[in-house]
Length: 537
Image (cartoon, rainbow, N blue to C red; front, top):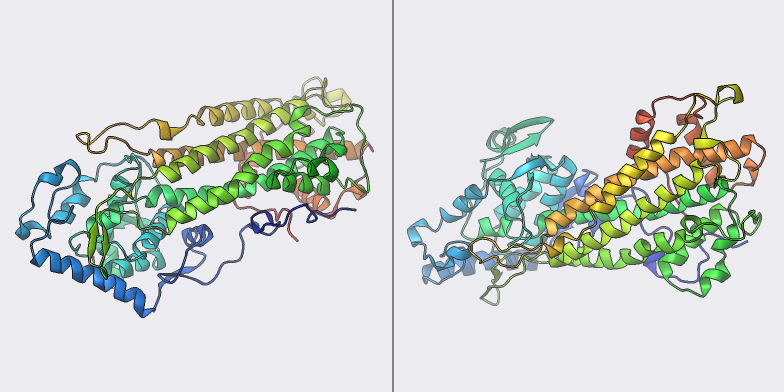
């Protein structure tokens, strides 16, 4: 028998333990001493660990050198964008030295125009951690006080209230990040211990000193890709888990539909060596117990939504290493403007705030994820329809024969799946191609990365809803096969037996029509919390 881990490849990106559900996290994430992973950001977002700054002297030398160099340039009356000039198209406006220290405060204030829903606590904490990571590269000209206060906000769970709308993704996430900068100086609202409060009052209560922004520090906080990158970190972890869950649901669908397990054979997949696709096929093959109990269906070939599932899920699985590499490169970059090399004494004006890489990842990810919604919507259609489900009752109703006339089982749930899938597919229109020239044609080509990231999170939510419905329905289909003695429960691999037993305990058979909203919401939450440890060694 071939085990789940005996695939034809070995790269760490595709290891069955690469990113299991809610992996164990270190007690602290240390900024300033090496690369930070996206899993460090998600752990900080969920307050599963604390933030700390390195004690490495060379790091602090670089931080202090940036501050000292800016002070030197100011004394010499040097011209520095956003320090001695206005912002954006106002770069030609020379700011009198007497007003240089007021300038960053004005940047935080005039960008306080965000609208829409606010980011969740988890998302806003991810933004704080992501911005701290960028500033900790040591090329932003920020003070020790700024880094320490960002650390304090994370560790005291002071969460800025950040509206979601208003960023074009270049010049960075200016408007949403103004709510971070404003909170640091005591002028915006935060969530603290379940209450919405003025950040100044919270800092006073905790004995923290509000930040007095130095020249360049307003730009340093606001002029970067922290919001879109933070959302990308959170999206990645959810998408990675969905490749596992989608594989498990497909295996259950094959069992419920009396499918042909030979479609996932290792020899078959050895001749098309996409590594992620092969991993998915191995997972499904393992769940179907193919080598001990090959099941032969009435049809020689199952329909595409079963037979081609590894190829569909595999697209996302194969893209994950590129997604992660790109997200983590952006995460570990200095992405504001200008870049300050304090030790080499250079001020370098550029466009590192441009979020094109994150925009491309998010547009690509949302398309691959939406394809999973479409896959399971098609599988649901097979499961419900007596023309295709190989003897299961219509709409999977488990009603007694004399009650079948008035019971409709999962009919409306399938309609819901179609609605959620359609909305997910509609959102796959790439945001990154909708650049708009703005800000007096200074920002004449922008990334739209934050809109792409927000779209991706919505597609993930909709796809998780489709998967919750598919899981609720297919576990009923498998139970019906077992009841009809068409499937022996003991023939299932132990992981499937345990998962089905838990699902049946929590969500009993739908024998009489009942509202399923509560069950669906519970399952969506279980998926987002990655309740089932899928495909672990």
